[in-house]
Length: 272
Image (cartoon, rainbow, N blue to C red; front, side, top):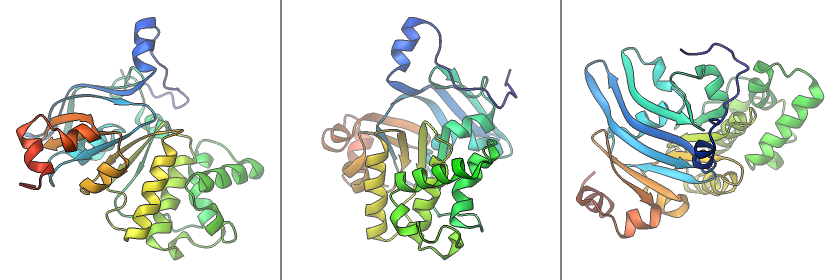
């Protein structure tokens, strides 16, 4: 039964064996199926995502990688007719049975393909989540805003214009602001759904450098069409095709010594 207790924290399971497993694993997906009405978009996905790593999801358009990413913070709940079977465990807790989705999204933040700052000031964008959590003291909010913007590597660019509209920023700055906004509620995981595909090469490089830095404190799971990007920054890579996870492993192995024929063909550019 799903809890509605918004103060609930995600706790690891009590047994010593489980605690040992989930000290290194943040997400454990077991036999995950997802349906949109009668259409099956994900088929028996089983994979473990490790803490403090960057995991890249690659594959052709429509293969299920963004759908999978959105199962990790239940964004697919917003799609009419969506049905999920199997398990997605966050630190050993079933996110579809034991965690309220609003609480879950505080632990699992998300950055989308197109930067989507609120039509508010830069400060109010970052302070939005903490205010929803009940933080109202200005000194506390000031500290959170500065910390989050520093983590997003954009404090020096924005510190003198915090009360200007976020809509006046460049695309790359807006995306880093959205990352800061996600970090302000101190999630465990940051999901990035093609977060650089709408950006120029310089802004893309900034986001990639930022992702590598962020894995010191967070787990990053990213969807990318850019295989070079996955090779540059991902620790692990999963190849999706037609709703299946075909192969998953160390990035170097996936690109240099893939085991599955479909992976070989995809990473060599023969389809997709």
